Length: 329
Image 1 (cartoon, rainbow, N blue to C red):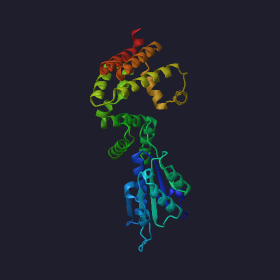
Image 2 (image 1 turned 120 degrees about the vertical axis):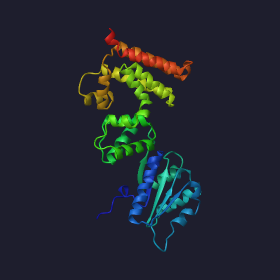
Image 3 (image 1 turned 180 degrees about the vertical axis):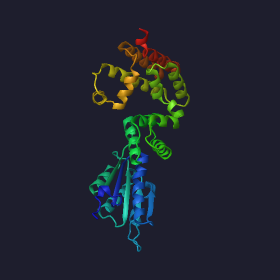
Image 4 (image 1 turned 30 degrees about the horizontal axis):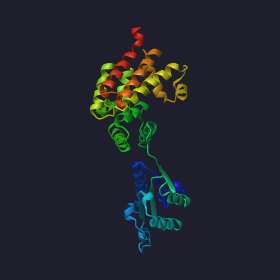
């Protein structure tokens, strides 16, 4: 059997995990350790922080053994290693030991860049572990988790899960695992709602959805729950703004298939369908009124008013009324 290319082989002499997303960094380590133990159940794993890897320590850990045991040496926060220890690591990269896999975890910034460059020059197998700060990245992560588990989840379900659980990747991964273990067949939005009702009801996007649908009472209830459970007011104004702008964009867009509109407006096709349903009853004037209400609420929650909660309630009611402006005409 042909040997795997270094980039595909967890047992390559050197794995470089680059980024600041802790879950992904931990998974990069776990993949190497699992492969090593599958090859040799007695693999010795050393997981070290910069203060534990002193000058000379790496040489001791990687020196030849009479028993030729397999070993995995993990170095966390490699960018924080001392200058002398970095010299040791660079020297080791030039002549790595057999049966030993070195895993360097590096934040990827300017600090310790010399070591990062040296590892890449040495042909390290590299694993990207970027911090996921954008909602789209977290949505892609959830989709990938379902795919990795061999399960199908509706796009709306993936979005609902992100809205309900939040930005913590560990919690998102745990939520996917729970749904995969408990639910048979395709996972849809209703399933996510049953499992995460309390959290979903506290979502800023739930407040926005109910408001732009003209459901004032439900929007206010979701708003009060959100605030009571610690959702930041600025996140709610952001969600309200996104909801109203989406309706304005779709109103002004040319008609067409969801896929075509998705490309034109920069929205996923499933969201085009949802916004189409939400925009019934909206007029261009209603969108203008709602956007002004969001702007006033945003100023209110950022220090321009005495009562952020009142500012949000006022905006929610105004948006809900605007959503029904055609019906009152």
